[in-house]
Length: 260
Image 1 (tube, rainbow, N blue to C red):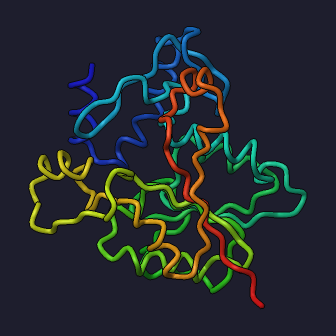
Image 2: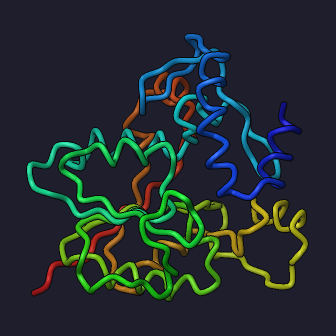
């Protein structure tokens, strides 16, 4: 199964995968139904989660029902337990980059959200846009989610500046990235062009860097306040195991200071 999933991820373009998943997902959910692991996003339980990884495959990662990964489930728990994202009585203007299937329909159904999705290629995007040249006005959005996007962008500093520009003062966001916390500085090498080699070194064939601990200071350098949230510390070891989370994964919570 691991070899098949690795081949699918590395061979079929992501927009096609998104469309195919709409058909495959309910079949997988029925096949793997059980009681060992639970997806907190929809509350459904399974005897196993699916493997995932463009290079090395990780076991029990991909939820059969929502297609969530560890980071999606961790973010869901954080949003539900630690923010007013789902409960705010005031409208939240949300900008969501490269909208994840795990969240897309659920966010669309939230009556307190004014929900805009954007991406260059995703069929789920309302607005086709370049993150380095966004078509949105300054100070437009209360909340911005930009998760596992910046590692694809050659000029990530420009992208961060655009995210800062369109966020309202006092607004906040989550900008998750694949990160090696053992690495002090971010690594990039434009001479590595072979897709297989890129998947091996950067974790995915279309990534351009591996972020280190300096990622947070890069966000701070464009003006964001940054809180490095290890939310797995707030959960029991049983919850981490049952929800198939990556212990120690950091949620980068960013805020744009209010105007003075």
